[in-house]
Image (cartoon, rainbow, N blue to C red; front, side):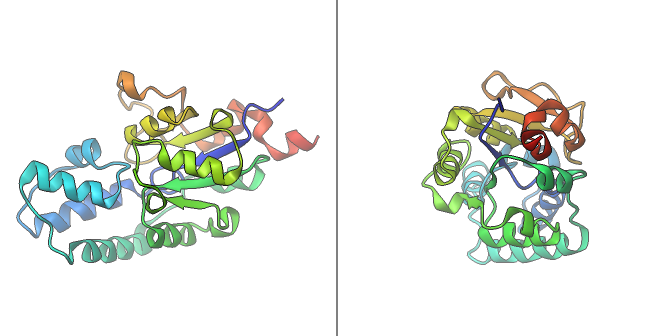
Length: 227
């Protein structure tokens, strides 16, 4: 009997190795406005968050209202960097090609960004239209809304869903949704030595590399289900 009826993948930092690129570009763009922040600050406050949350945090913490054209400029700079540098996570193609249960993507990224990211990573054909963004719900991560929306659209009860997340924000969202959560720490922004998570964001387990995915959950693999 398989453990799960649905796997929900985050995108940035899980399917694609994008978080360091995104952080570097955000740091550079706000520096043009005279605001100096560093990578640890971005990781603590912005990882896994939507742009409106980033904007509100900057306003609250630094008293800086980002200009109306900032989002567009940042996104264009980021997408240009993605075209030059973005890499798919190792072994993701194999996992998505061999998965034997329904799966989808639930991300805080904008629809345009996730579409371009999946195209650049060569994942669009595998994922199809099963992509849900925070624009579809009232509250983004760490609220459970996006994961609950994705499970509802996929016709699966939350307790039968497995979430693969990298950020503490995403872990909190998955736990709040009543789902099983694995933390992927194989991106260039994390690693096996990533510190232990706080009590309110403890995943059910860690996943260091996607080549371990079917070792941990063999019944999710297509040939095992059809054998």
